[in-house]
Image (cartoon, rainbow, N blue to C red):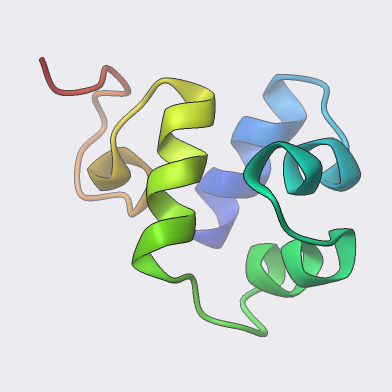
Length: 70
């Protein structure tokens, strides 16, 4: 999961700070989440999925389809 989330950020040419600000957390906390040092909460996964216009299942690597559910 952490690889997919990092890859998404890098594919969009965004910094950890930019994503952290968009989902309402600090850059340090985002760094811990992205590297797996701290677990993702359901709420933060939903915010991240909404930010990227994808599904939580895609973030969690449960599907390879990045489209959000209808």
